Length: 251
Image (cartoon, rainbow, N blue to C red; front, side):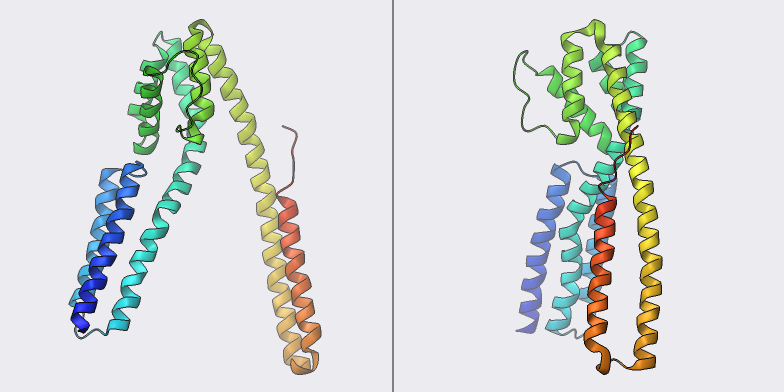
């Protein structure tokens, strides 16, 4: 009975893993080489569990749940990381497009050449843009299926297709806007890092003070005051960090 339950759990877990990995592959979130490493890691974890002698059903369930939970989080983690990577590479993409167009290359060909120099994720997204431009019908509405990360770039490329003589000017203006936005993000990130560092230092000092008060004066006699102090300090830290996100800079 135990072996049958373990086998059933293994089949169910494998089915879930296959669906998650298929989702990652269909969305082109990572390269085939990276997918091979991910599959090999999960296969190794499954093999190691099978080799454990006389493992209980509870222990197997707990151990087998760990890679399944990790796999469930994996698409969101990869997507978030790829999003940040793409945002950081937009200026490079535009600079490459501008260089190729100035050399007399069409915007579509420039997209393909840039995709060849980019990594797997960005290259795939640029090729998707190229295919969309090829099948674009003039005057049609912006398709809702396009990746939000590519929407602004797609709109700019459509304008470049409509007025080829203004291609370089539009791309340069778009790049300047992104540079201003990146400068804003950099300043905001620096301010948030300073606020977080101050919050960490104050939290460490506060915890040390609370520990000293409990050790010196006892906890039971001052429980209500200590809990109120912790609540107010926590609210203050969250309010400070939340306020820091509203910082605006003139760039």
